[in-house]
Length: 390
Image 1 (cartoon, rainbow, N blue to C red):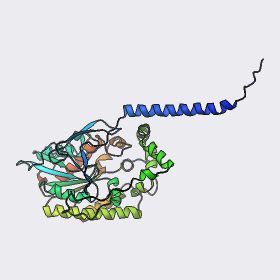
Image 2: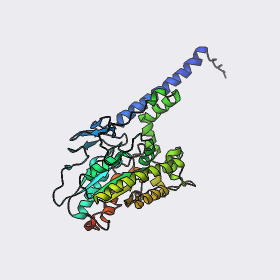
Image 3: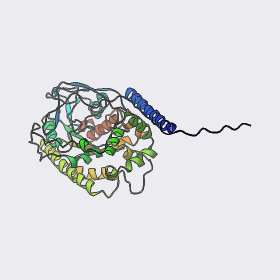
Image 4: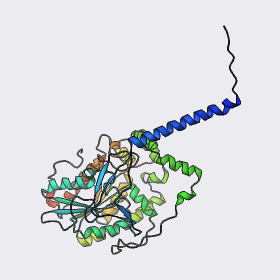
């Protein structure tokens, strides 16, 4: 038998082979990113949004139409009426026999990244129209970015529409963001056109190489696609979310000092909003929309020691009831679904076109259950239960 001696590596091989390996990896990454960009397109910038340097930061152009898309969802259309509200109805005074609900808040209230027919607003309006056997019109003043104290101004605007109820949906992220608002004192009389605070300096210019690479990683569409499938498994997603530090600490009672400060700011906001609603004689409905990991644990997924997905909504409910607001925990509807993860855009975090209708119907039934007011004659007439599938 002839034994062939191995050829020793040359200096040229020592740098050429690793270079070829590196170029192969780079080529595969570029191919994956290109394919992800092609088959999972995204358009989150709203062309109807006009930045204006006011306290609200921007406004929506009246009678405007825009197209948007989450990477994880379908293309959808925003249509705004003559007041710049996302509604199929005019913001003029309603005809006789028509009831109106106004929605304030940020992205979740506004049906962000979901076709209008599948939003909380549409499903709530359709269900109440069936229950009341009369038209119920929805005016959505909520827009992604209208968080915290901006809603004091928005509430005053909503009440000028003379609604029979005002709905305000909140997520843990909405409440988390309140501590970071660079806003001066805001009251119901503060004009929306008041000049806003100076913009914060661009931190990206001072980022180190590690942070810049981290941003590139987070913004990669291929990474979004991979996360979408990975996050569908609760045994993977829940531990990852719980490891996100302060962002997940609302699930760990007793709450941290930062989350207690956020609840205090929320308490102050609700005090103002309920005061406005009370003076107008209008029910104010606060809707809590849970985060995906939260609802999966409520639905039965294993949860680590020290984690309680019910603690945070209980704290919010106590604040709402103390100020005389109606509190709706959308968890009631979402956790009954056989696959709660499918109700969310798993990477983006917003409820999808499957989850939002469940929330809307739950809210509709709670409004109809109010003991008094303009919807008390609608009780028990719905065609579907509050937790029915879309």
